[in-house]
Image (cartoon, rainbow over all chains, first blue to last red; front, side, top):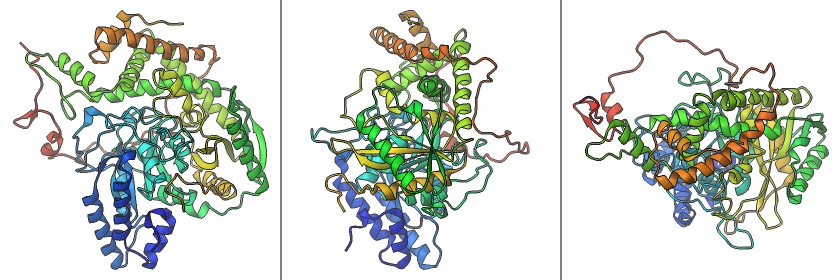
Length: 492
Length: 96
């Protein structure tokens, strides 16, 4: 019998429909794989009983002749999505033991369409990080190894989701992306990651980091899988006032494979100083693949690109400092209080004990840039530069249908590298942050291997709410690159 | 270049309601200064006549009828609280 964990989401969907196997069988195979790969620490909370219950219910539903878009397909859920009755931690100590009384809209959509939850995937604390080394519940290990044999980071913040999909511990996973948290780990783990347009998926029930940037999206083995899963996650939601009241297209139907005559933009500003030769080559190869498929390549300019990271590291912490004010030791989460403590003492002790180092740093930077006397110089200035970045993209999209860039400036690095200097870690997001600031859809597709044998991804950026073009071009890129490498032990 | 001193960090930590030890303050002063130096380059961008971009969602905030749509879920609201009493959250004494 074929190894059910090696199927793509689309293959598993079709196999279930044909009756080749049941959701219970699919789910059991993945639970077994989770047991075998527990050393990767991809899950914070495994939910095998819930998974089996959901799988049985799904098989029963199918037997009665009804099947949703994700019917019977076992997935991992980033532990940033509130799941009713299942611990939701955001990888923070402050939320340890928190069991939401409600279900996030995105997971509710997925489960309504028949998806089966295997567990809650590990991440950087409150989704703040690019390496998944800031989780209170331990580092996630990338299933890929380079020649050194050292444990590598899976990227972040959706590192557990990426590792789970790459190691066949889930058919697919939900991620969230604020500055690159879906795309960068997808690139590091050799999978596909799609950050949709801001407003495409409801943010309701997702633990908030930076509300003007946060967006949920699929992390999958193929571009087709991303199209299927996004179709189930997306849609207008009255409970999120920034969710867009527009219809969800059939994303899978967009995968026609035909990009003849399409214009693909290449922004010269992304060819940053000191870009490793292999990243440069990866990008050139991608350009050649799209040309061969009949697309026309156009040079575009995004002149404010170099200011994107600086803008992001003001805007995101500012919003985080405000969002994370809710962790007060009163209504949920950890409380630390000694006899005779004042309300302030309790706040300060609970938050000091509950938040990790990077989260504390970001809250404080955010507090500083929003404080009296600095608001205009930092926060307001950043919002103005953010508009410049947005306008850059508007200009470029007057000429092209999509933009092609590398996803990340390097392959996965060893756990422990880039620690100690917060700014150095931030540089991993240099190519993903601009699209986040502009709210645009971004797709990472694995297209090559580094000299050390690690996966590298290319990013396609699209117009607002034009995930279809991004997926169509991504599908062509995927086909041309024919990236079939797998981490050791997961080969075909 | 803006360099944060220990006293400024102490004030930010208090505004953030996060307890920080004396040695933690010095370390944070270094870290936060490095981050501020990093974002300093924004100052060179010409933003003359540019409106701040607060949201990319090109939407008018939707309105709904002002009516009760939820309620009677006291147990659910309190279920994750560290300390409750008689259907209320319990806070340290705030009035002498």
